[in-house]
Length: 168
Image (cartoon, rainbow, N blue to C red; front, side, top):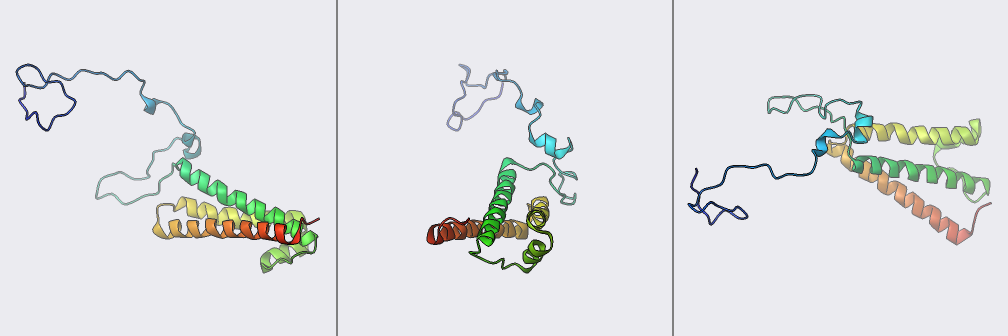
């Protein structure tokens, strides 16, 4: 048996002769790594990284995204949909005009459904690129800027609602 300094050992019951007892398995709960989680659905059952983990290996993309990334992306998409719906209501009531020239063209050419489709595409495609590059510092910074811009736009819609009343 191995003799050790007992001052640095906490929570270990030593044998009477001052040695560490042999290891015995005390875990009773099942192995949580055996169960597939919801993130496995989005990763298509691939490895977590596209390359190995040794120092000489190149850095790869991570293809399993945690709940924070999904909540973040969902929040941006939800705020984008809210912006589209409220902007459309405010335009229909004559309260405001669309300031974005691309969205103004989509609204004049195709109507409401084209407006929503272009708005969704102009939000979802760049957001997918940001999620794909989520470990890059510039992508993290850009994603936070995007989220805060949509939060400020939502606050602007709330201001319009309370200052000018409910649009038609």
